[in-house]
Image 1 (cartoon, each protein chain N blue to C red):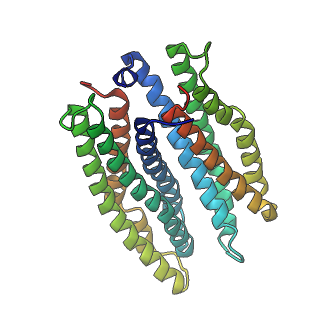
Image 2 (cartoon, chains in turn blue, orange; image 1 turned 135 degrees about the vertical axis):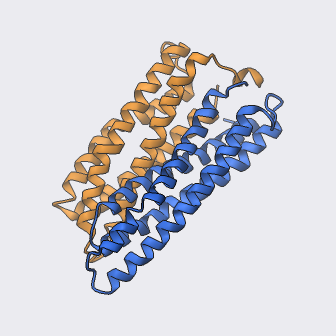
Image 3 (cartoon, chains in turn purple, cyan; image 1 turned 90 degrees about the vertical axis):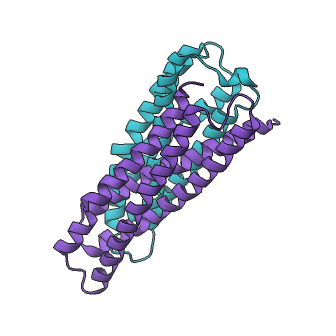
Length: 160
Length: 148
């Protein structure tokens, strides 16, 4: 079962996409669960577990980008300036940027939850507000929708 | 090479549905594996919460995703005419997805059981991790299409 170079490149590119999008699903499930809790220790634990998702998303983004670009340069059928490839790269950057900003806000909320957990583990309105931060929520939503829009672009390849 | 990259536009939506379901199935199962593994930490007071979340994730994320993935798979197979003449790489995917329903039933049962019998936790975590790995084999078959 010898695979061609194209098949290997495609496999690693798609694996990156799976890790990135799968990681986003993990992050949403754990993030929603954290937002629905009140005790700081529970919120801190669930937000710490999203570290697994963040690692998967980071690794997935790197794999998808590197092997995606490799595919583009390796295949005669595609050009870097093809509309759907430029669109995917723009969405990729925007998704990463909005996700990164939201991730920083989530990290601050997690650190606050960990501090409260060490100081008596009493529910706090301030923590609830930080965990349900509408700006972080909106940024996470935009980042996730952009990532899934890239998947749609990869399938439809408009103009290809 | 170029021919392999071209497909009729009417295949796109079923393919998107299939891949979307597969991605969410992977993420949902990875979530269950993460929660089940984290609940194994000795003396962790939040373990019941993690086990409850694993069970809810099975019902609210994993099962709906499996249905979307499988419906998308059948749809695209019919469109491509591969339902009658199934190539090896499709067979490999189906070998994970169809018997996978038994694994998912077992995972759901274990996720329910582990809330009352925490000793089943390692089995739940192990099986969830194995299923995540099996999904990896399926996506290798689906993307690289060895032997096609």
